[in-house]
Image (tube, rainbow, N blue to C red; front, top):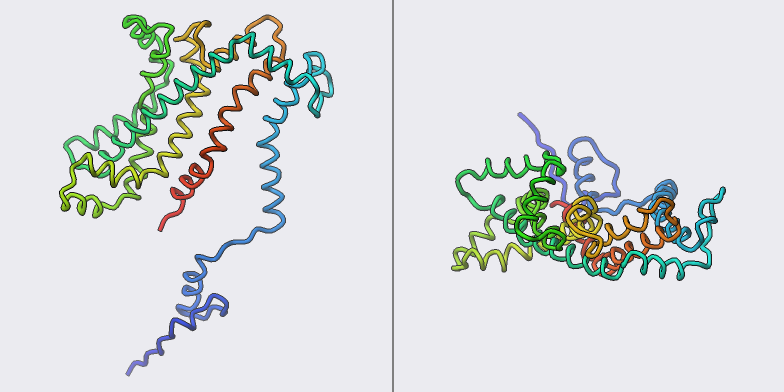
Length: 306
């Protein structure tokens, strides 16, 4: 004859009780999974060190941009801002035509980001939830393009842009990067987990078309991932130097090409170069200040499962 132990009521499985042999310890882990972890002094000290290390390059750019060339090259270098910030900013603005360069970079980065979000979300949804012949092969081919160095396509791409009359124009920088393999793979992986197949079936039962499903179901679910992908794409397009340097000319540059002109002389003035770098960083900081909450929320929603 076998005996069974009495079943404990749910109220007895509290996180504060010590674990008992059997299922008690597991119950404590399950109930304690939602408790907020508290960091100790070492955690806060590590966060302070990492935060200061991240902010220091931007601070040094500000310090170097506020001194003259001789003071920046002194040993030891200055650690506090000086009084030449506005004059160096004005000199960098005039020498490299940064006003036009910033407008061009905003146009280029904005168009690339908008197109990437649109096409990559559609492609990611198709690869994640739609069934069609050759889906696996096509997805493998898309991922395989990530292994191809971009330098291999520079010569044929430059010849193609020249043949269609886009040499030196912003179109030569925008159109080759309207969609990327990383964005397709990123959105596909996110929608594969975040978008329930039952939700799509329910929309089809209600008579929704594919376009309606994308607009009313897919885009609201994909919004957190789109914010993260948009931030990564905008920063990459804003900081891109190699292809814009080859495709554009000095009269129609992006911000990174214009900064290259500041340091192209035999003895460049480092303080003016740093002032130009500071100007090029401000739009990125402004984007993060405006959309920072949505970007962080998108990162967290992609990190938390359950």
